[in-house]
Length: 372
Ligand SMILES: [Zn+2]
Image 1 (cartoon, rainbow, N blue to C red):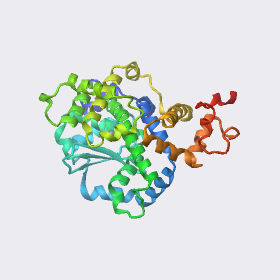
Image 2 (spheres, rainbow, N blue to C red):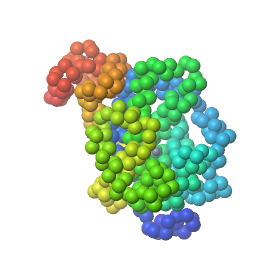
Image 3 (cartoon, protein in one colour):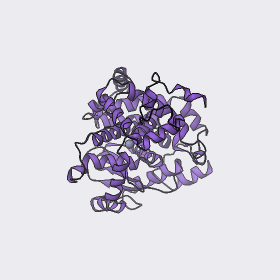
Image 4 (tube, helix red, strand yellow):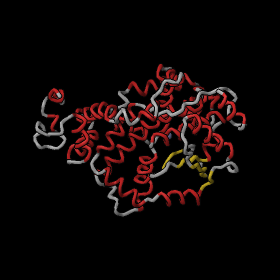
């Protein structure tokens, strides 16, 4: 508590209320399960590794930085000092030692992002700076720092590249089904990752109302007096009633041109989490630590979500999901090997040589891993 007030006293933009700090917090504390499953599915796509390597070669970190250096304002104690303070504050609350570089870009779209292949860079558009008040902005900065802590910037960069810049690069076959599958998987993951980052934003701001207001403003512009939180959340309930958020890429794709419905889903998800026991436990100081990240070998959580996602893909009637499933199962790729390791299928004795489709043979279930 003493360190809190000591830090707070030196910055006029730090809220006067006491906030908790989360030393050593692992990103697992706030990551939404759907985010993890989508990421697992993404990594399993054949061709993803190739695309990733190509990106890294083509987009050296330096040029990414230069792009923003030449075109945006780098946040510091003399430029957008209030954002700089918020950034330091967010890193302090989430205990991120290395503070990411932040830029403000001249763009009326109320948006922010975290990109970068080696190191995360945070970019905030002027549209957002003008739209949000201090506390709403604090949640947004926390959201972006959450992306950084989770290592999301790599995937966001690839998505940005494939959707915005690839048109200029002839060798990327945008019409290729594998690339299309990667882009849709990236988009799906991207939306799910927002749910995780929103939670990080709430952990940083610790003001649920401000988080909610920020989302409403992003959805509806600066017309808070015309909006109503309950009606907004009702909208979200209506949208979700349409089916399981997790299992339809198509549904997500349908929403693409309109951010509005998705923002309502984010609000509903965040409200639910903010009122949950999980959130309370974190606030009480009980949360997974980074120091334990290695011990809880990724396999545990990944195995669960991988199994869930593989099932969803396999059994989906959705033609797009089938396409993704076909590609993912079609190659003896890294994904297949990983899956085999997770399901204990390494020997490949019961998979009949078919890479990836083996588990489908025995009635749709991996047969309890033959009692291992
Ligand atoms: Zn985000």
